[in-house]
Image (tube, rainbow, N blue to C red; front, side):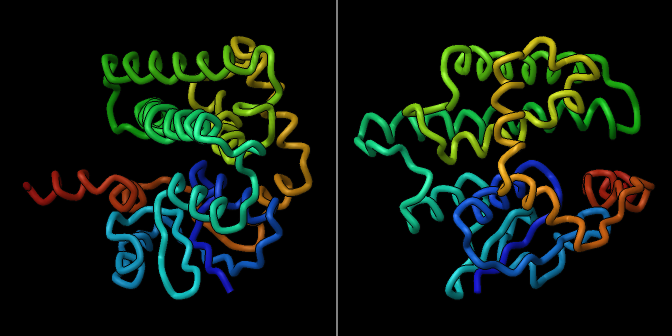
Length: 231
């Protein structure tokens, strides 16, 4: 059975949604980043970068959420553009990478400097807020006259977008949804899907540390440990 190493953060949620939508049997393996489980030797053997998600399928590991989505979609033939021409695949890959290399990193850094940085860094906050907002606006514009991101069909790109868009207010602050009505519509439609509800409920079967104390910060942001060690 496929093993799915996860925690309830945006990148693993992309994969959780695919697994539920495709009805793929899997064993969920929780990785608590506040306890440093992502740096255990057995996990690093699966992903040397020490991040979730990871799947182990047929004895081999696949890491990085974009790679996993592509792997599972290609393997199952599900949630790809229905007219899987080179043009349609290029469109899909472009938007999938837009989420993976743009939306995710900028939104993640915006959250870091807004919620976790030990001291305020106004330049960094402004920089990542601006870029996260800009990327969400591009998604909103894309969805103005369409229900789905590519080929007018529900694909892995929609799953990737949903995993991050549902965190818009955590990234940009309360009331931010007012700026992105079409992205909000897209997010709400996916959130109502039974598979999305099952993906969101996956965490309920496990206990994750929720408090971000000094020890948790050292596990989540390893540069803090290096600073304390004088490196």
